[in-house]
Structure formats: structure tokens, C-alpha cells
Amino acid sequence: MLHNLTQIIITPTMLDDFGKYLLIAFIVGFGFLAWRAWHVKQASPQWPYVEGEVLTSRAFARNETADQRGTPTHEWLTEVSYSYTVNGIKLKGNRLRAFGLNHFDEAQAQQEIAPFPVGQRVKVYYDPANPASSVLIPG
View (tube, rainbow, N blue to C red):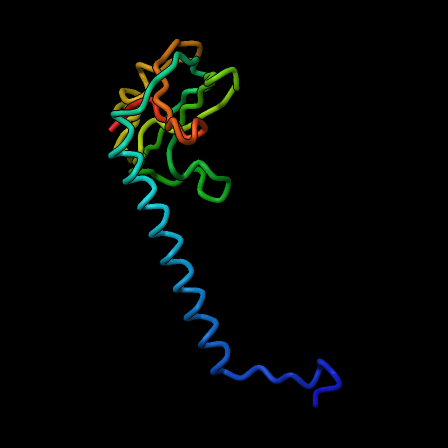
């Protein structure tokens, strides 16, 4: 019988098992996120839409974090947020499309967000089963 928690011994085998479980959890989590994005891509063209308004719209280099500033970049991302109302409930979204795109230069990223300047009225496609799930570009 164990009377003191300090008597618990952690063996290398226990650490190996923990690493395996952690890896499995990561794979399952990533798989779920990929499945969800695929589902949005397939279903969103049939979703209803409402009018919304773009709140933010920007292109940025992936390495804009403090520890990477000044390093050359080969990848640009976009960020768009918008507000919309479904059945009297005000919602905010930030998904341009089901799968985000990485761009090789700033011009490509700017081109993608050009139709979505701040203040622009836009069609927001939303999941009727979960109106908080939305995209601006279906499919």
C-alpha cells in the first residue's frame, strides 16, 4: 500500500507511453480539424447567406512575430474578420474560405483580400445548423 506520493517512481517506459499517447492525441486532433475544413468546403456552397460587413482585412508575412522580424519571408497570409446577423443574433466570423491559402508574395495576398476592404458589405455564407460557422468564399 502506498502511503506517500513521493514513493511513485516514473520509469522510462512510462515516459515512452506518454509520448505515444501525446502523438496519438495530436494526430486525432489534426485529423478532426482537417475533416471539419473539408466538411465546410463541401457544404458551404449550399449554405444560406446574409449580408455582413468587413471589420478587418490585411495581408501579413508569416514571420511577423517578434522573434522572426527582419528575416526574409517566402510566405504571406491573409486575415479578414466580419460581422453578420442570423435570426437576430449578431455574430463575428474570420474565415475567408474553408482552407486558408498561403501566398508566395505580398501581391498575391493583397489580391485575395482586395474584394474585402474594411467597411465593405459582403455575402456571409453560414451553416444553418451552426450559424457561428461561416465563410465569405464558399467551396
